[in-house]
Amino acid sequence: MRHEPPAISQEALGSAVAAKKWARGSFQCGQALSSGEASTLSGKLVFKPGVELVVSVKGCQGLGWSPASFEATGKGKDGPTKGAIYRLKGWVFPSLPIISGASRPLSIKGSVRAAHGSDARPEIELGSMPGGDTVGLFTLVSKGDI
Image (cartoon, rainbow, N blue to C red):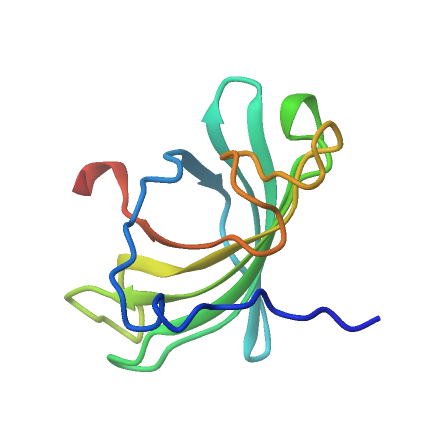
């Protein structure tokens, strides 16, 4: 089955797109595990108590000032998020100082696609936008940087 992209009117091309705050949450994770050039990380993204996604991340380390890159999947396992799936791609930008090839992340930026809504509303993602076609940008900062 082939999925056709939605039609775009000629009037819409080149026009401004209004941005809307999608969500704010707290990403909680442990230490990344490295295996050769790839690393994995597991954690959870908590929007409020009882509203969270389990996140699994796979990435490649950056070198010097080149950012690390990653792909991740966030899945709702319980409660109102159960069944929701989000796909993320992004980069981890280093901060000063880089000592022995390691530094604290300055910022983590990327894109997120709402692949599937919750089991209760599979066609609508958790932020009430259409599932499957909704893409947004994200930035993660540590609590000390807010």
